[in-house]
Length: 517
Image (cartoon, rainbow, N blue to C red; front, side, top):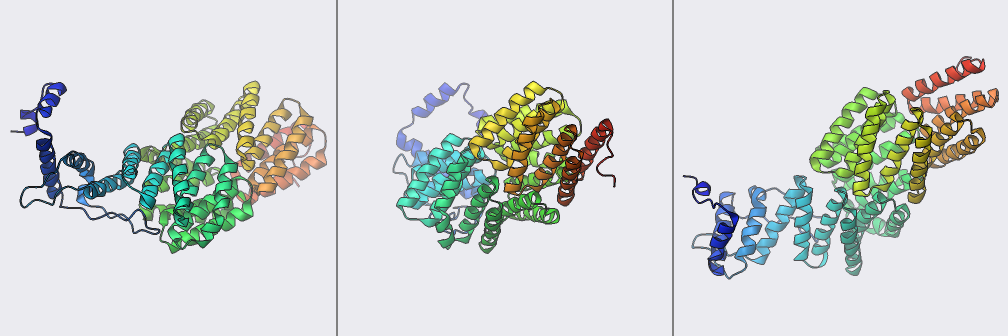
């Protein structure tokens, strides 16, 4: 006979009434007994998890009880409501320390299993019963998970408290981690100046800390912000330092993140072979760490390199993998990024309706999680799609919204790209003077941030404007410079597309194509 079926209540109210008839001490003793039986069945008492207040703690070691840790917590919490002792031969009595042990193990297990809602709740519950640096770390872990799941307000509140506590405790490594995570919140919300200010303020502490596992994360955060704000040389230095520190500390996840960022920087600055090799290293590091979330991001970065160098089939395969991983681990922010990039592939393949639907879905996610930076990118991509579909009024409005976000967030790289694409729209609608001014700004920004691919695209587009203005020599010079840059970064698909556009316009103007010597 199955006990759960034999004694099943017909209604929850009947169950609760019967349960309430037991004396509190009897209930507590029954839960203590259940705790002991479950614990014994799953291999006995679990070991202590890594200390939360250690600057460089060891990794978390799984135990059979982790899968039932939340049940053990529920039984322990009720057992603690009375002074209960286990029956003879059973494990020792339940204490607050034992409850905290399983609460931390449950939080660690939920996080490793990518159950993000449960993990955030459990870390928060653990923090509520702790003090000092241990409380800081538990609350920081809750805030970090809320950030990845798109709950930016909750993440910001938790992380601001952690940062204040870390400074009161004069803990350099906790301040580094809290500043890194809070900077990521500001980044996602489009507050680039606040993000950079946080990272700059802790730069001295980054260099002084003796915890290399923490150091790698802090350098990586600063590198990402420098890259987005056009400080390419400084970004490369910080990425390199992040990778070295991560390797010294054996932090493969931080190493993967640093390598992924460096690969994108190499690509933007025209070092295609280095970009490819570094992106592969990023994927390997994430897989060796066994971290699915990091692997999904690394796959997405690799796919972006494939997209922008004309390797469309490889890009689509990796993007679909990255999207599946993002959904599997509950990484809503990156799910939106993957949908945005898939839309780009559909656009290039001429599947404009599919691209539009993917972009609208991506934008819903960006708004849901408060990711202003990527929302600006998606709006720009939608504007380009509408421009190419001949929906010029809609495109111009979307370009305006995208540019407003990029100016607000201080994202110079994407702002320059959108200015160049808006210039193309102006040229196509016979606003040649306005187009010329925007091309000058776009090319200047691309050079400022070291984005050679964007510079090449803008020069090729500007050559068609020069042709329309009957400035053939200038048009030819712009074209040759732009084509050389696209060749240098390995974007063969863009070269072919721009060459076809140029030949068509040259034929209309009765001019020899610029690629004919």
